[in-house]
Structures are given as structure tokens and as C-alpha cells.
Length: 95
Image (cartoon, rainbow, N blue to C red; front, side, top):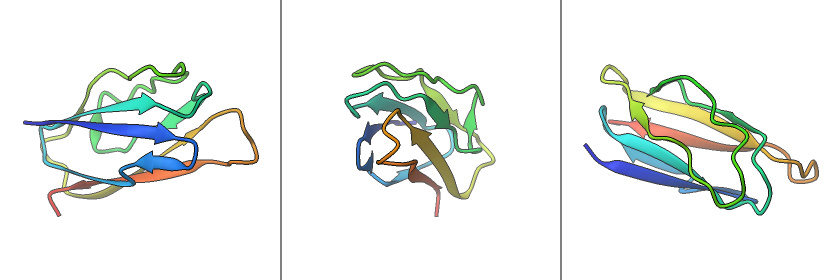
């Protein structure tokens, strides 16, 4: 089991596609410069409770990649800069 950190930036997540294995932990860090007002979690993680809003520079709780997950799972986030739009990323589990 490993802990993966995904940075939520103003131009998109880093990394955009995060490789994971079942049982890994994922945390997201807000580096957008503004509060993240919405985070739609990928369906491969538990619990399915959105951490939004996420303050500037803060990290989410740890989310666990489900044991039966395999494949690619999308997630998205938004923050109050409508010109930048919604940002998307992918969790790749065991592909």
C-alpha cells in the first residue's frame, strides 16, 4: 500500500493520470490559489464523501482505492474562476 498525492493546480491536476493499486491511499492538495469549491471523486475510492470546499494549501483526508477496482476512473474539480473552467484527472488502477 502506497500513499499517492495529487496536486490540484489552476491549469489541471499533477499528475493528470495517477497510477494506483487497490488498497493505495490518495490525497489531493489544493494549489490553485483559490478555494476548491467542488471535487467529484472517482468511483474507485472510499469513502465517497466530497471534501469540498478545500482551502488554499490544504490537503484532503486519505481516500482508499477499493480492493475490487481495476481500470481508469475520472474525477474533476472546480474553483471560483469561471474563465478556467472545470479541471479533470484520471486514476488508473492496475492497468
